[in-house]
Image (cartoon, rainbow over all chains, first blue to last red; front, side, top):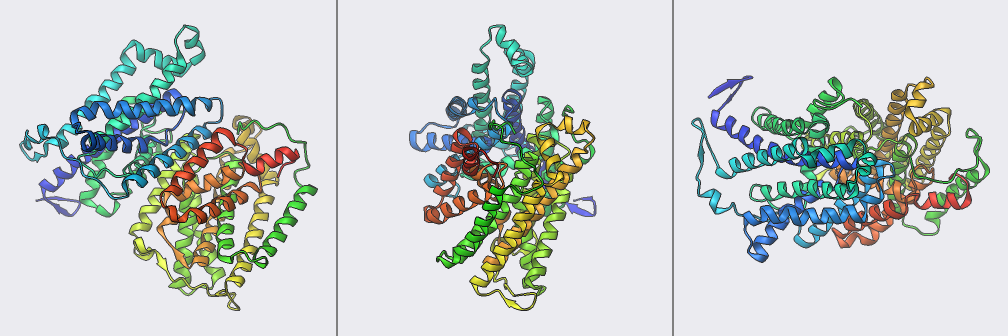
Length: 299
Length: 323
């Protein structure tokens, strides 16, 4: 037993919640990264993001249960399929709104999110559907860290999403494609004058951001129940994460995601009543002390 | 707001132009006539509460250009407080409503002070996150009754004299409060304060350089909007004798946006029309379950893509007069 803040807490419980917090943090990081990528290029807050995360989980579930396609293929196919729907949304709707006030992009993505969530609720009901943890990962058995044993799938989620986040950071900050992207964010007209197809780049960026959300959904499917509401509850927390981190820095948003996941986990140990709201409270404090966010640029 | 309307003829903003007098006259007549021609009073009261809620929301979005996604917190928290005050503390209805309105006003002060520290899209995300905090508070707090909400709230006697149990009497009360609050919003928008708000909406740096403290104006607009939303929520709790989690859920914030958008952003009469359209639609489609969400989503998409002026905005454009 450890004594902290007058609570006696078993180390197992403490480490368990930290590990769970890292898993949640992995989802926060993936989702806020997708939001940041989309925002950087399109100047739109993608309110559909939660619904697209949910779609990722459902596509994985449908692939498995209707077509017999397993987890590993779903990890590739679901982001591509959902990303393609994202491309369609951008081509059909969003591209007509860039000239207008940013309000309209926000309202449109909110509306599309409602449509998607409503359709899935009609089709699948409100209750959750289970998704098996892939056997290949389960076969590893619990990962022994010396002081505790972790379920292998949780370790996989954290490791894999860190890898995806870092790869995204690398693409955007260290490759030629990323340089085009960043340049087009700063001055689209000039980049277009250099012969780069900026509208197509915008479309693909939206598709990529949406794909990241769907990837998060596939990763989440074996941990949480696959349900139509799974997106709307997490996305509001992710918005708070984005406000805390600021969307200016990619590494910043990854770090913020994981850190807040862990803080949330710790709150579950010490003061469970506040575990739902702790991130919002932190957001309020950050706004008071550093209004631009921890990694944000002042505008 | 870059909506792109053609310029409307200039008007002396402090005096009510004749066509708006006519509109207010028609509104008063409609409020009196509606129950007489046999429209169900509970439906009318529901629509009026939402009309006030949407009008209060529009005060912020349409005239200050601030996109809040957290107005459910004001509607819902005022509902809970007035329901609790009426049921447990035995407040008379007017005091219960005042208590609810005061709560949402204070909450608006806290939310507004935080949210105006960031601009644009962050504003929407902050208000949404803060209102989600209120949702969890209402879910867990002992006095709110969790999933059940506060049920069987007595409507009581207005000022200890007029029994509000009769739906027609209650309707008269709600319609009067609505008309008064609606006129107040009209006066706010057309006051010098409202003009400064619009200036900040159109060009904030310029308004600041003219010597206006934009943050103060935005905060006051936010508090007013929150307070009037709370008034709507408090009345709604007494009308339905119920305060529940539905009213603090984020989707209720979305409804404020939807009603305002359908009726016409930045028009005085628009949100009211939007509220009647959406409430009627919900009544018709109630048995379709989740399809209501889908239909609302479709309305959002259609309005944003093709109907950005909204119903009243379109009418005002045809008449070439602000409504």
